[in-house]
Image 1: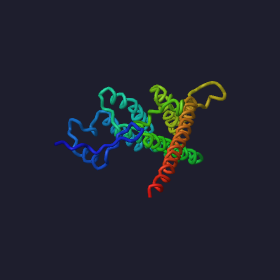
Image 2: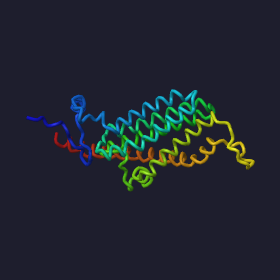
Image 3: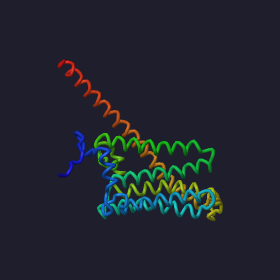
Image 4: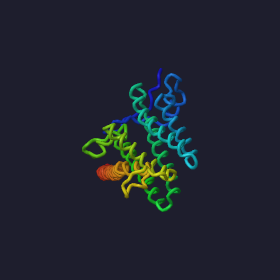
Length: 259
């Protein structure tokens, strides 16, 4: 006789919650033919981590190797999701692995920029904090409201976040442009040769500086979205708290009346 898995559905939600001990046992016993750890998009995710680690290794002394490795790692971010959908290998583990890799990779680069530009260290630290806080709170607010993915944002919650997460081109361009801005700041420490423009204001401009100027507006928009994400997630969590407190007040008089 097969044992029914200990699963229950959240009221009003779309997520089935699996008992943690059962989940650990299931992951331990998974077969080679259905091993989620070995799904193609997750293997791409592991390669992103390795490439990012190598980029960090070369970051302080070999900018060419670092830039190539870092950019390839970032570009693979657009490949793993397509592979998951094409192969029918989407997974919760893969989604979280993807987001954690993004956050950690960018944070490591910002840590280096903090040491490369000491006067702006506090600014880079603020960007790291904003990135982690907005994504963590957004992820948690998605979980407590029963969403299967942090990307499933409806337009009535936030039109900005809905457009950001539901248009793949917008999501890719925002993330790529944001990373390009940080990479250009990194290369500005190494490249000092001007492009050769004749305009008096541009004659000392290097190509990393030109890329930084062009991608700055994407960087600005991306971090405005992070602010919106943080604020909306905060309001959702406060709303959930208010709903639970109201429910507790309704239950309390009833429980007293039965005594």
